[in-house]
Image (cartoon, rainbow, N blue to C red; front, side, top):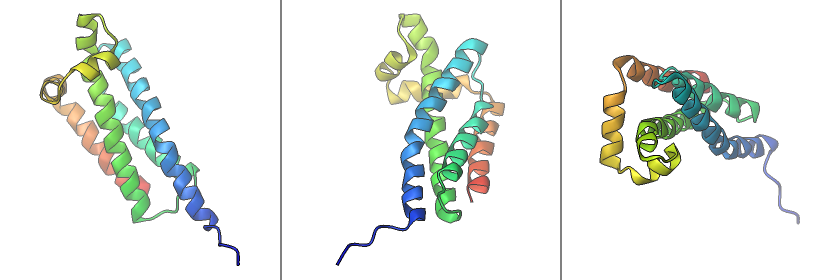
Amino acid sequence: MEAASPPPRTRQAWLGIAALPLGGICFAGAWLGVSARSGGRAGWMALAATAIAVGLLRVTGMPPGASRARVALLSTAAYLAAGEWLVACLPIGAAMGESPIEAARRVGLDFGWLLIELGNRPLDWFWFALAVAAAWLFGR
């Protein structure tokens, strides 16, 4: 007797989850580029993180519901953490003559968190909170 293959919706759901890391890498690079070009933190890019996470899950056919909303929320939070870490390391890398990625490997958690706290304004934190809430809302 032949083993039954998973239903197409399940395969599509895994495709969406597998596509999320690539989306996160692209998003972190885009946020880094916008921040470097504008000279600011560009906290509004948090909404782009939500759009990428939710869009990838919808395009790949992950079934709607609470599980898709959770994956969208976690993906958005991970995108924000990676992007914010690189943006925080941008001036450190410039001062040391390194790329932000090389600086990000050298910066410890305490110093990185300090850079994030000092660099973000209340409006940036608002954008982050709005992005996470939108990920839950639109991820359903």
